[in-house]
Image (tube, rainbow, N blue to C red):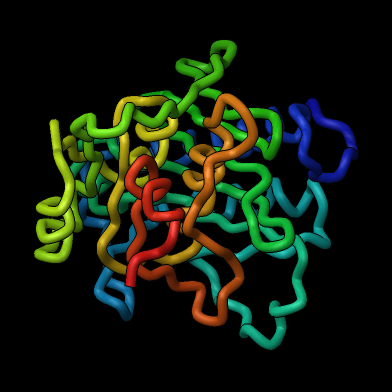
Length: 274
């Protein structure tokens, strides 16, 4: 990789700079497809019914190439690649979780709210993470113990923080643009909601991390690659230490149950909902 030395991926600002570069390179390739007139018509359906485009696959190739040059021994789990069995990965202590194009529905609908997600998992938690929105040219990045950062148009980043609201204060809720549900409505009936805002992809995690929202409830299934990078941003947006998170990694099915991230999660001990 041009401009970087041979240092292995570790929890450092140097690694975070390199990971931001990888995400930006993948975003550049994805944008080439996004700006073509047939971006939506290249979509196909996977076996689970979710859409996939050529941009998903080409973004994955870019990321795999850069991560392989960085350190080929660290395995990669990605939405757009064959998944290793649990027996083969159950002993992994570190690996990459990648979603090269999170928010394919937003890509197809051309609203710009899709992201490139890359996270390094160590001992079951995300310790490096980047979420890059190519159309918006906004990058969120975080490293365990080093804070969460936001940069726009590739300028120097600024620290971002999630400060829980005072007890009894109505909450700002960020929710999925594409995955509403009766379960979500039932949950929101149990809390005092001041405002509901909708956005696609992992930007929901980032909006909580930077204080634009108090909570992100997801009352439906996600996969680990959907959440790892955004979860890393959120965890490290605390002013001291880390925010607790209900999410865990390298589970047998790589599937997450329902969860609430943010203020409501802290009130409930950050437990995943069932």
